[in-house]
Length: 140
Image (cartoon, rainbow, N blue to C red; front, side, top):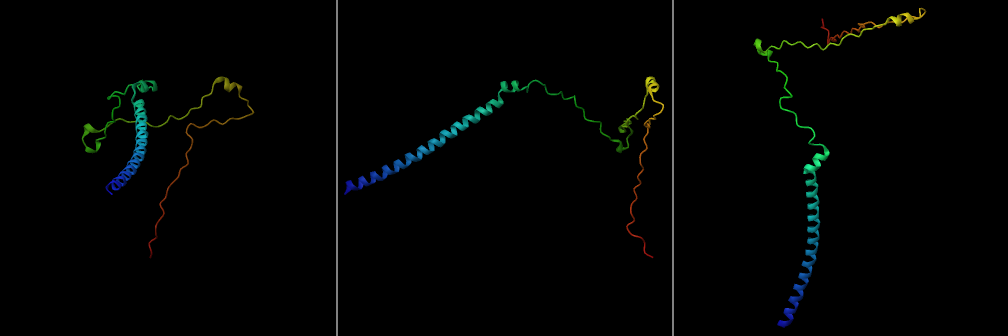
């Protein structure tokens, strides 16, 4: 009886060993795929870090700008009331008015029977007056 008991135990252990071997094969396959993926990712990262790749792409062609190249605009501190902070510079943003010029040869080649209008240097601008509507009239 002892012998049969031991044989039964050995069979159960052999079944467990086979099951564990199958699980090990599955885990080994997953591990191999993970290692290959990890190696591929390392190659991709290394190719992006490589100085050779950066030089080929032109990353090292233009040096960075110097720190003094971009100066911040002068701050307006005129609200403080101190005269040393008042900015007296005047910036003219108006556009020059267009002019119409004619040459002597153009004047000679003009046909006297046709007339040509010359554009004014200051075209008239329509005047729009905005009026606020009255909300309500006082009742008497």
